[in-house]
Image (cartoon, rainbow, N blue to C red; front, side, top):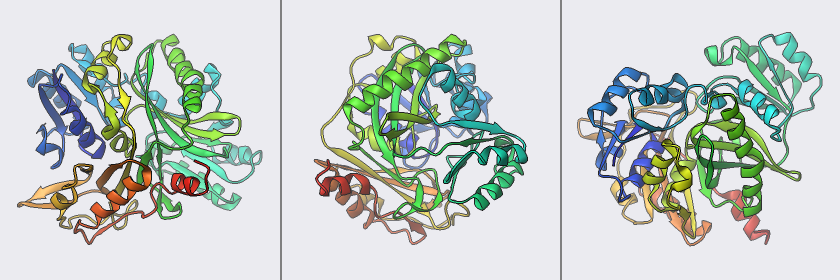
Length: 429
């Protein structure tokens, strides 16, 4: 099977690394890819916003399957375009991708399907939004309705900050993506990322991981696209995952099919584990980042074959996938100044030494080769993943690998996995 992965960051490098191991894959391509992906696949220099060229590239390499990584091309309709020319695509249509493309749409689907989630309101008028806040207690949750690269959610501790954020978003903080905002009731609990493979009618649990959104240790600093993740998470018990699949994922799948927009691809459910059970925070329509990097090393089975079954509506006929025993942990190395003004251009060395351990993977997220030198060209630049018999061993291996990397312009959190390790030391897990 000839497989094309669309995307150029850490998630897509991790997918390429994993699919390259599958016996069903005879040729692997990544568009546009990155220097890390280029070591294991053929990279095609096509921009993610150039749908015509992406479709032409898939045809040129005679792809049997296209796996779309980022949300942007999905919301723009790349999956529709590929299916129109007869290419199997693991990714939702533009209509189905609205689950991520519009938080208001997602909340309305959840309400229609009876999915447990926070009370919400959607607004384009600042006065109406502030009036809705009068009914809420802090902390206040304010979200850009559209795509904002994982940074469009603000959690505000007091009313003055919340009022200011309403004005900021509606005045163009995220451009057209925040021309409408969603305000939600704050959910108390522990967050969790759950991933299900879907073919429009059937959902199969892939796994769950726990992300770290804040930039700095102790969950301090600005919100980011994710600074690290680990799996398994103690909060993701088998019972909780089963409850989420039956009470959140499958109802959403049924609701989308009922309105003529069946969801094909990865349904990423951001959950809050509450005393009353899991509640939906949001849906995303793709593999998470960095959760994908964390989960890929744990997956056993022919993943490419399963994704093909998902793309062709036959997931119930797909071979099994399992998660191997042990733990996996991913640490994001970001450029100084991220998420606001990351410092780019700095040289990076030591990656071969860092990846010398066969239980360590270095996934490229924002790198480029320039005159034979690897340089940073983004906010989140590298993902260092490691596995171990338990989470403590995986974390120790990941940080030991990071110590071998020479990149003065980078920074990272030193407490990835703290929730699980704290719970374990307290005898809770």
